[in-house]
Amino acid sequence: MNKALIVILSIPCACLIAGIYGILHNQISYTVSSEYFTHFKFQQFGLIHFYDRLGAALVGWAASWWMGGVTAILFIPLTLGISEPRQTMNALIRGIGIVLACALSMGLIALLWALTAIDDQFAPHYQVPEGVSNRAAFLQAGTMHNYSYLGAFIGIGIGMWYIRNFRKARKSLK
Image (spheres, rainbow, N blue to C red):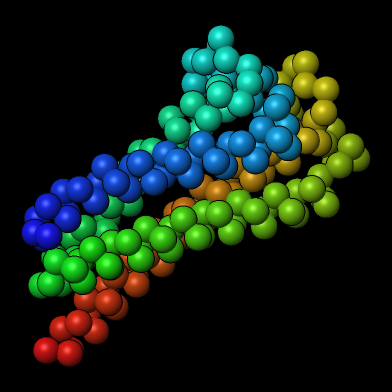
């Protein structure tokens, strides 16, 4: 495959991967707290007619697909020094995999922490939308959401470092 084609296709492919991640991520957070969506996310994304898992999936897509584009755009310049198209593709796939692994790990670790640390004693200290009946679950889902983004940003940094080192290692082999 042509390197230019790999670089061009990496953006929509990364957007698709990030969007699917968002859809699956929101199925977990919806399980933790459907109220996180019905009292916050659906309104935030203008999905006032959705109050179910399909709505959570749509929010997940809308909230995350763009991170794939940002990731690919940040990674592409780092691959310019890699001459082989196959190696370029490998570097991009591994970099995107690093971002996914970091986002998933950070989100799940945060959720596990939140499930053990955020309870009815903790929840009154934080503001949640009016009408939320399970404040602790709402905050637990929000914690997972926020830390997943943090994990993605950390993953982008690690992925950039990885691709830079991948490129350097390929140059030294020549």
